Structure formats: structure tokens, C-alpha cells
Length: 77
View 1 (cartoon, helix red, strand yellow):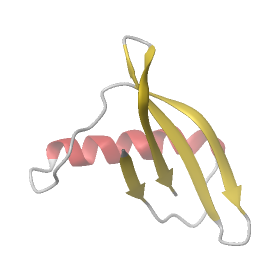
View 2 (cartoon, rainbow, N blue to C red; view 1 turned 60 degrees about the vertical axis):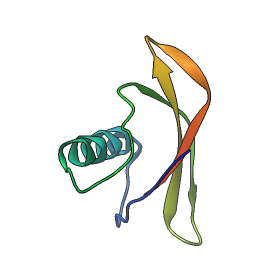
View 3 (cartoon, rainbow, N blue to C red; view 1 turned 30 degrees about the vertical axis):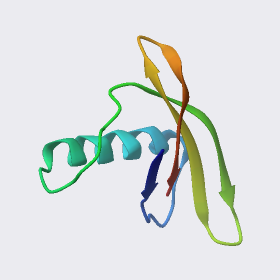
């Protein structure tokens, strides 16, 4: 399972995907980071906790457009 925490003051819905893509690009080129980076993923759900000011984005790994069973991660922005 992929767990990732990013702290950003204001997140707009259009920015969520680009934030996740940029993070994956960063860790795929950083040799000090461990783990695998999904080459394809689908945003399956997201919501914002107004009390905490955090946005929770649920992503699922995909392979040739087909969702991979039980390959789900949560990104907190």
C-alpha cells in the first residue's frame, strides 16, 4: 500500500493530479527514496477534511488502463 503525505496550504481539484504526478517524478529520480512508483494510476475518490484542512486522495494502480486489484494508496495533501 502506498502512503504519502504532502502538506500544501490550498489545494484545488485540478491541482491534485499534478501534485501527485510531480511527487512520483521526484521520487522516481531520487535514488535515496525506496519503494516503487506506479507508472499508471487512477484517482478513485477524494475528499477534504475542513476541520484539518487536508485533502485525502485515494489512488489505485492501473496496468494498461485496467485497475490492479487491492493496489490502493492514500495521498494526503
